[in-house]
Length: 433
Image 1 (cartoon, rainbow, N blue to C red):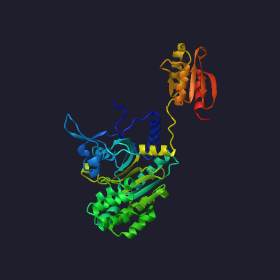
Image 2 (tube, helix red, strand yellow):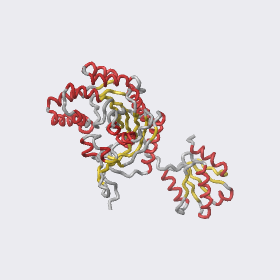
Image 3 (cartoon, rainbow, N blue to C red):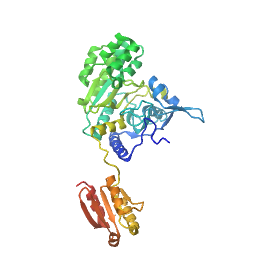
Image 4 (cartoon, rainbow, N blue to C red):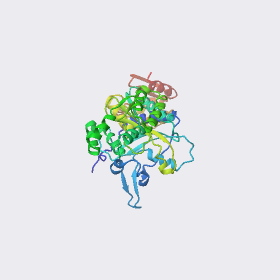
């Protein structure tokens, strides 16, 4: 019997699950602070909902697609949280606009597993439905940077920005490319295959001369406002002007404008983007983007049959955690939520130990009590292995006096107190003072 999960999937032990929940809680707190409300969508979507939304590569290779053997209908595991949002809104069009939602949940991709890339992983999405204006795109970037800063103030990152209208103006109108989405998907592989790999793929698609022109265009990169103005100066067409003017308004509303860079090589491979696009890359380690998104004004209209503007972004929770652990920003040293381990010294005082544990839980502490009838030495060893900060010893003497002996390993402090005083002492021991 194979005890390991399938390739690209993984079991999550307590220390990693605790870290993940902490990271998610910090991100969620920021999303709420900006006025986003939660929704939940199913793990499984009908294939017809997902078909035609992502592009050839995603729909042909990366989506987990299957046929229900009972009904014969085709379904798929959700590839992202954006298309499910579009379907959700189409079924709830009475929601007041702009509708600001977040969802933090796993998604599935039949990708090739590698460092920082899994087939099952968590995304933390924030989206705004109903606003076509630059302030909505600016808020998405601001909520992204605030969420990342909430996870760790020491996280060093760059926010890359571009606009699909600028790309369309240059690649479709000026370079006359007949299939720009295919070119975008090639450029989107820069972090996977490098410049030479992208050039080789473009040469196969376009020929050497056109590939060289594309590579020259995507070299442009610099501070957001100055570089967008330079793009507008170099390329005199209406689509470039629309995208540039939109981005310049976004730039004036950003909280961390110094961390935001215009990058012509940023294209985002999914077909549904229509305006500003964004990715966040860490300075170290080099693990690819940890967040990304953009404006998708046409996607919801595929379900509603009327235009509904929308913009949003997603944080890759698992990739962010992997990067933080690798760089030393995150530690996997918390192995339990337990704050107090009640150590029962003698078998005959078990009921008293049970009572003490229940009382401490009623005070709001996370408490373990021995359930395996172990000796007190083994109970102590297990608590130490887990890193439980406080042990509460109970035996015949404590039971006869209505007391408990509390021990903090970090402080080297051991004190016997009456039960009515134990709450105050526990709070002090766990306070870090």
